[in-house]
Amino acid sequence: MFVKICGITHREDALAAIEAGAGAIGFVFYKSSPRAADPAAIAPWISEIPPAVWKVGVFVNETPEIIEQIAANLRLDIAQLHGDETPALHPRKIRIWRAFRISGDALPPSGYPAEAILLDGPGKGATFDWHLANRITGNVIIAGGLTPENVRAAVEQTNPWGVDTASGVESSPGRKDHTRMKQFIKAALGS
Image (tube, rainbow, N blue to C red; front, side):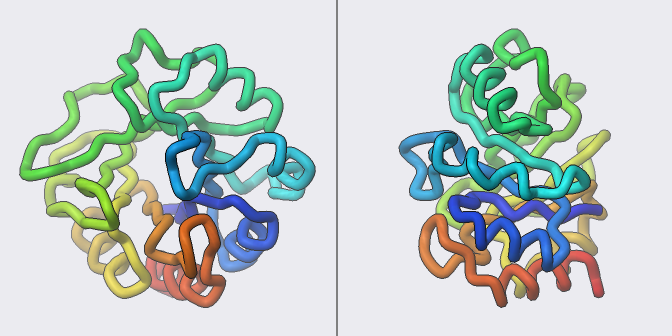
């Protein structure tokens, strides 16, 4: 299992997450997000992220061409799609993780063509019924409302491929609390 720290906007937060044991770093390329990253601002330092740590670009209803351009310029490993994208609108030159917001007991379509399905909460740091993840086959990433205080329970209930947090380890939107990141990764990995 790996841990993804998402919503990274600053070099020092990225390096602290990696030092704490993150296996993936997420950059939100959606201008309306309080965690939006500017590709030009992160370009000078993104190469400092070791190759073993996945660089994930988070996109919402962006064109495949723009995603592929940003991914190539920043050497991203994965595009995480959070909008209304259908498989026909997936970029072709990068690995795809598809995010679905879970409310109630509705699940994403079975057999969705992506390397992983990310199950997100209904929004604003809310969790969902983690047991629903056990109904999905393939690689599942649990997100939405995860904090150092609850991530271990999510892992124990679902045995996910990965876990993802953004607001659960922040001091303010787009800025990470390094102590909480360490606590989250330690709790997630059970170490």
